[in-house]
Image (tube, rainbow, N blue to C red; front, side):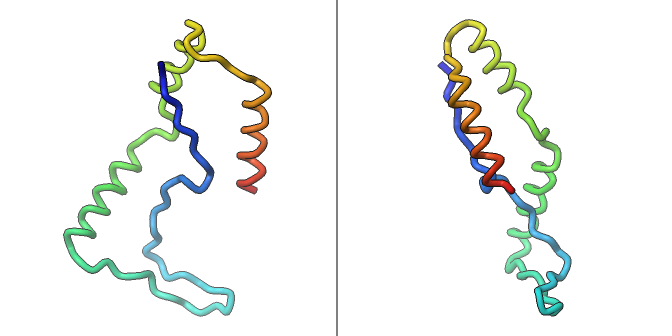
Length: 92
């Protein structure tokens, strides 16, 4: 059986900007500095790897489709519709 892990809109990874951040008062605030070169290198590698990943895990989509067609997992279309509405209403 396939384990599905729900995600929320705020679970997405964000990459820190290296540009100064403007506040409401139009003041420029410098981004926080990374303390060690090894941490900076690790973060750079992680960002590069993340940028290479597809937006959608197509292998996982294929697994779920196959499991649905074999009857291994059920589909509650009403619950799915409610979850989709809740997801998009929170992200607005």
